[in-house]
Length: 310
Image (tube, rainbow, N blue to C red):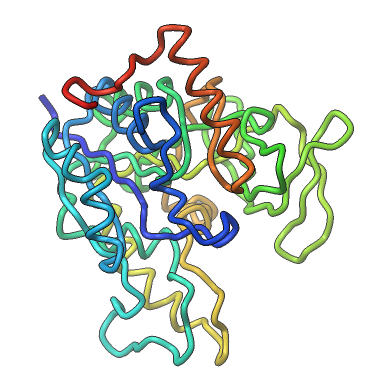
């Protein structure tokens, strides 16, 4: 059996969520959190190791609420995303509090990932189909040693990923007729409007996006070899920062898009029709709990989710 890992980026405390640790809010009837459902679906799809990327100051709460339970059903490893985990010759800018982004998060886990892996956000529900398709790709199709890098991603339908309670950020994808990613553009404050979606591009200009467009939800299938690319690119990113820049992040979609544009990566988009949901805003939580309850009543999940849970 080929080893494959589920890597969960859980180092962020959601500022928009209003102060609580949104990743650890219960949404299931037996106290399950969104991560429980992702872990359940990933293990069911064949992934056999869980890597949590957290912050050191969250460690105690995190292990208490989820880590210790998951350790009973699967091998677990931890990695710590810290602001001062920087390459030689760089130091944390005075006053910087914002994490360095998803690219650095994965880089922080380089010592505990030695197998093909899928990476996801902690506070997103992805559905089962994406995990199944990515696992199949990692096990049967991916060539880790290939150049350009062999990557896959879960391609969600934009209309299935919007919040009723505010704008969301999505990587809007242009995909060719063979299912290969041509471009991914970070698009901000996307909301449903008059039968399509409206958002803003990096320059803050308004853009319209069709509801049927594929978007990235940070669900990427990557090889351990890709970690070397992240390691190489991080100091290059840091060198581009201007004095006083406290916000710029080393983001996985941007890194992958740059590699695609330069011919250094080839990304297969594995479309999933599953409906995403997540707790971006505090007001999202009741809708997420209702969506989980609906899936339980349809027989998709049992409650409690894992045997032995109470």
